[in-house]
Amino acid sequence: MRGRTIKLSAARRLVGDLMRFSIGVPRVTVQRQMNRGARQKARMSQSSSPYWTVIFLKGNALVSQG
Image (tube, rainbow, N blue to C red; front, side, top):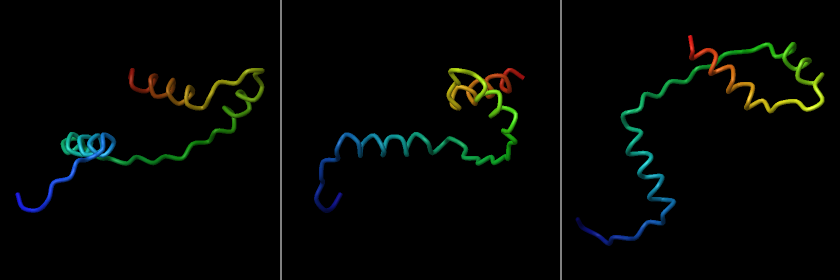
């Protein structure tokens, strides 16, 4: 190897490792529109509404069960 070697920071090494390991992972982008009106009303009617993250996580779990 020619040139000068430099040490990489831990964060930079992590990014490099993630990029190397993701080579075999397929990359697909899926886009879909959703009508959230009814869900928004139900969510707002509760005194303590759940986070959207929890709602989407639950939805993904139900869909993946199949």
